[in-house]
Length: 488
Image 1 (tube, rainbow, N blue to C red):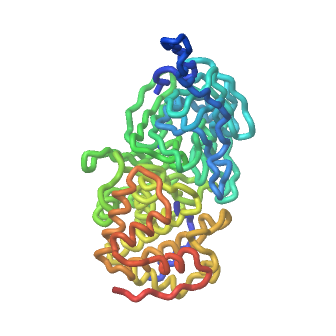
Image 2 (spheres, one colour):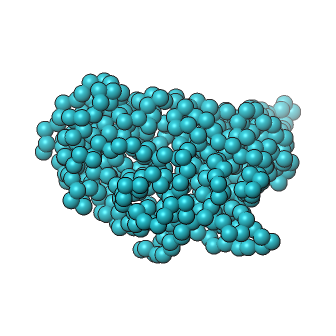
Image 3 (cartoon, rainbow, N blue to C red):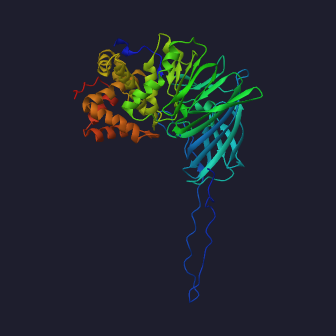
């Protein structure tokens, strides 16, 4: 994500198979020659089914997500009428139990559930705040797969979170936008809303004829009937929930193919044709350059969406199709923000967070991608960007450790600017050859997964052959201005 702000660079992610194993084995007894009974076979231990946790226990957001299961995929089918601001939907969740579950939770905010089934059987459900508690007719054994189907509806509302304000479903003048970080998905479908549970997604979004509904992944075409159009989208690479999006409205649409992948971009008609269109048109060009330094592009589609709404003053790396505030293009063409959000396709999307504290892994690498892009285009060098920040960043940046910024500073300047500087400090310490080997290895080895800062440091040390604890401790966790490394 990148917030609209003055840049310092301006200076230069089944059905249950088999029985649950609850029936005790029939005891077989035999009699010895003397008629005494032999030892009986041990009975199968009974299972202790318990409610799943209402949160994954993230240190920054303890109530986000849920415990006791792992989601493989979602099928989200919603119908939305902007005139009445009413949404109805059915979401199918394909998951596996990771504990013996009596019940499990899904995150769902502000929408009423009318029915729930688990493996085709009616399940009891109850709302507790922004949690949907589902109690199946029988317990779910650890290791078993299950399918939950939830039918729901109502007037969707945004979530007020302590980081960026409104996040989630926003009713707009010509449709709606579902967007936000660190949470947003639960405002329009039931979900395990934490980055640590990645899954695949299929979306079917039905809106009145004349409106476009753009979402993640590969476009699946559209069908119309009775004044309504259904738009289909499919993201088959594992995706974290906050990266899901839908943008409904009137757009200038651009489509095409690049390297065998579909390109689908949309710019709101609320802004005149110009800089936004030209900037988004550079998507594949920027992606190709980033591919040369990060390794193969990780997803099955390209694109971007430009929106114009005063509540959205940021760009977000929604998987395969970032969403940008029109504010980024008011002063002309802006490919640096495109480079930032496309870099997230590798770092933040394909390689996702295991915990929110490590947000610098996303934003620091994406910020550094801006500097690499500027260097590639001859605007300024990464070294110049680093030097300017060393001289000009506010004192608060040095006092706030990007590796442990706290919730209040999760998207603060330290995470972005000092995060980017940490990446360059690594480059200076290990040299260009080893640096780019590290970055490519990180993208390759952690592709489609979740990762931590400790894993990044271990990989950097393995590839470089150098001890880097002091470097990362100073740049990520120190509260004073670090010394500039000697450049190799």
